Length: 158
Image 1 (cartoon, rainbow, N blue to C red):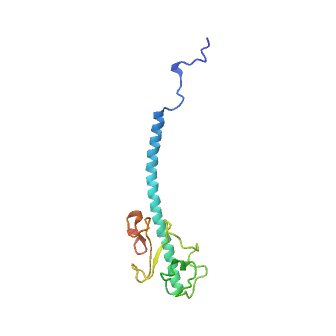
Image 2: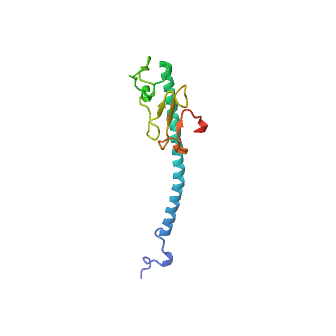
Image 3: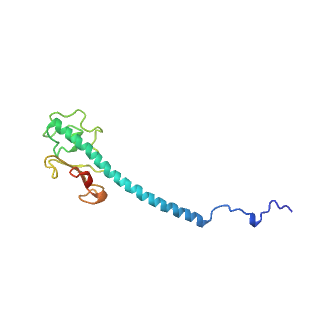
């Protein structure tokens, strides 16, 4: 009798993982993914607010350059589009910068895909202009990620 091909129960090796072991690993991976996902999602929301602030700073600078060249800000009716194409409604700019005042040749949308709001003279800045985003909820007011972001607030309040 050939004993080489016969395996004894003592010498049998496991050939895989049990269902319980696999389920335990899946649960652990799920928990870790949940924890990491929450942290990453929170950072993403912070990044959206930071992006809105940075875009608004660029738009503010462009508006101030427009004012230097033309002795006034674009009217509310002319809007932020006056930064990328010469307004044709009164008051027309006296010295409009060839190519406009924004490098990208378009007025950026806020991180939530909505246009920035612009009012001159501003309610918050009566000697200048108000520039704001309604935040993630695209509605006035709100808290956290839904809070409005305006050029009249200091960085600590945002």
